Image (tube, rainbow, N blue to C red; front, side, top):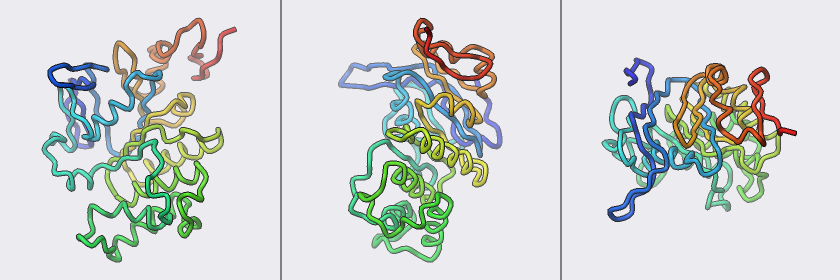
Amino acid sequence: MFSETPHTILQATNISIGYSHKKKSTVVAENISFQLQKGELIGLVGANGIGKSTLLRTLTGIQKPLSGSVSIFNKNIANYHPLELASLLSVVLTEAPTSKNLSVLEFVSLGRQPYTNWMGKLTPTDSEKVQWALQITDTQKLSQQKCFELSDGQLQRVAIARALAQDTPIIILDEPTTHLDLYHRAVVLKLLKKLSQETEKTILFSTHEIDLAIQLSDKMMVLTEANCHFDAPCKLIEEGKFKSLFPEDTIQFDTKTGRFSIKD
């Protein structure tokens, strides 16, 4: 069991994740425990259907754990008021924004909703946060374009900008590199690394880009049917945890290079 340290931001304690319907529960994964520290970039990997999105939804309070607890700053996430939680945690989902007719500036400004009055009027401080988020994601030049005019890579950076404008200590992203080519996948993940280092925000992201995640992440979670392994990438490589992700007769993991390859 983990003991909380002064820099612990989010902690999961022996949680089981899944779905409840009437009196029946379907467990997707269980016995998951870990701590996320300030300024860390954490990659979450696992095979399709293993429960990565379910875990992220549980950590963000979108759905409740079947058992165990999730806490932010040593307070159970269930005990936070939604507005209070929105000032601590921002989420970037894989779905495209429903308001694609908004300009980039308008869309990113939505990140300030937890702090604005009932009319949604931005204060000078709010505007400064929005401009900072646009600048650090290199999307200032897109600010007057409509979201529907953007490429997938541009839209992903704009979604990250909105999360940054929300100015929370924790950012959680569900597969932020989906539908992107290799170059833009690397751009987005390098941006997340830069943000965790320069802003000291705790950033957790799920991804299928395991090779890139190994190179850039401070810590990683490897979700398998049997367990959730959490440690620094080098430690997980030493312990052979990545080898358990896929059938070895098809895909092999090279512990020396930290890369997967298709077996002949």
